[in-house]
Image (tube, rainbow, N blue to C red; front, side, top):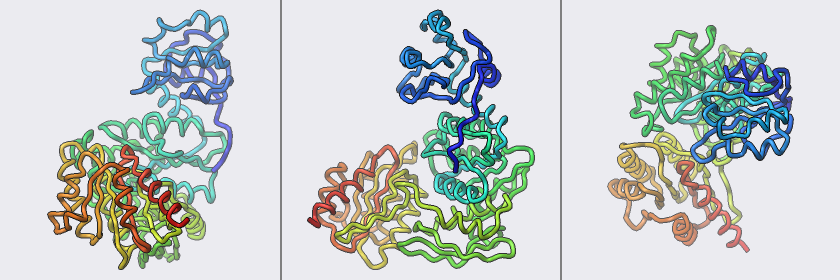
Length: 476
């Protein structure tokens, strides 16, 4: 990774990138960085006034100008309500565009083209954030690499990442997310990947994408956005991804546990410290130890290894990158309290496939100990939400857990699914976060394993915090 300075802008370059209209200002005026948050602007930056669902950046323009900012990108429809004459006298470079969010993406695409960096674009229903972090860690072992920060994977976050490109960056590793049809195509158009990775295709964001077939079409559009000589790195273990591989006009590299994969893993072993496996890379077998639990992590690591292999990295370099990986917060983090409770914090997000993987990991981790599952709603599943939540409850019961807690609109469906599989009603509890924490902490004992998981909007990390606070208090 690097702390290099982003490539600077001139007014003329912003006009070229956005096809905007110059309202005022000097074409050669230079700007060091692009901002969308009025609280973070600097007087040598350009402020793009994004109109979002909650905030409208145009309302903060007077404040930004008062702070000394003299580069402004605004929506053309807003110009009649702004003091443009006064800003012109101040020497502000003001550019009007049809849509400031699209302009931000156009600036990012322009920046990507003028930089010397190549791009890896990663999408999928599950594992894309972890795969992105693994891939960035591998690639950065040899190349100066820019990577998506946090969850910057949408039409605002991805451009902000690419606008951070510096002249000495060699690669960028970015994540592409979606809620609705056409979003991946737009993001791929912005980042123009040299390598496209699809981790898997599952029932996520069904509310916007409609069906699993809609998810497949949306994720597959990444491959249509690859550069002319781009390569597709695809999961050989996912039938829907394999179908995309057969349809791709680009060179395809398969990874996975399947014997058909060019980059594959064998001898996968899992314990509470992480997993180990043998990486089969061409004619080399390399032993790998990852600092994160869950068999699924082997597949995520294989995607990163496949990218590294395409970049010409040696087996030892790929190994060093994989083993340097540390989990992202809230993604399958194992926490051990001083009073003997083990928590699997997987609260970052959830969909049916990731729930299944998490329950499988809980079963492996707890071995013969008691297991508890605290489930929050899976969001954006549309009409299929009730049945899919019921299936999660049934799956939880079959996994052999001792106790099930559920929170959210579909909590009743979760516990009904578990009871239908024979789980005693007394062991299935619904309620608020506070009620769940109170009941759970009154029941937990040393050696118990607790999995906490739900969609981001459910804020299930507060349950983890509650258990940890109780554990700290109970030992004193």
